[in-house]
Length: 106
Image 1 (spheres, helix red, strand yellow):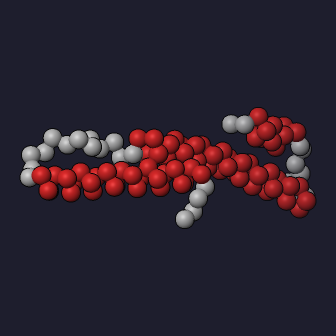
Image 2 (cartoon, one colour; image 1 turned 90 degrees about the vertical axis):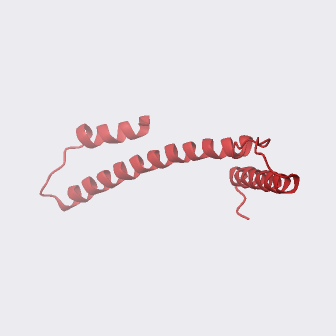
Image 3 (tube, one colour; image 1 turned 45 degrees about the vertical axis):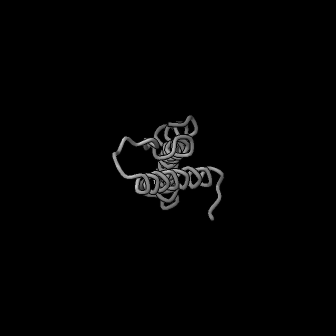
């Protein structure tokens, strides 16, 4: 939890003497509760965003992590077609992840 959010929560609990009968105080209390909820949600989203960036970095750097030298026993033509397909898929994943990290939307 950020220091700013901790301060807001402390002020909410200790720093203001709310009068339950006052419409203005009820409005202020609702604003504090809303602000705390939004701050907590923002922190959650920032954490999720960082985790997703790490996943994208992994894809950008390592692709799909398929073994690009498979040990399958096939005829030459089928083998090379499959290998090309896997390499194309891996390249697509890497490029898409790199674009996402740069902020490209196309």
